[in-house]
Image (cartoon, rainbow, N blue to C red; front, side, top):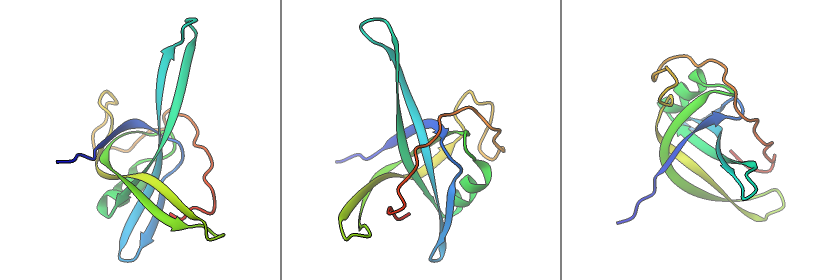
Length: 133
């Protein structure tokens, strides 16, 4: 047996990227998760990881309507790696999470279907133009 599960709770670093692909819709979000600790000198440290998360169909429609930059989100899904060639013909790899379930994080006071307010979250890094959606 093998298991491929991602569980992410964090903040959107930018507004959702929503597109129609063929006869369905896809919505890509960038979610920041942060780890905080004290180093050996007792100084506070922080590291932020960015996760590309893709939603398809009805979930894509809902994410696009309900979330924006700074919104908190809880996501469950699986890791997928895609291969493509960039403009120069170089083979590239893109790893993302294909979301199966989502909700507002516990303690946010919201439930699925509520409209989000603007929340403080980190800013997303810029993405390269040569990377296809």
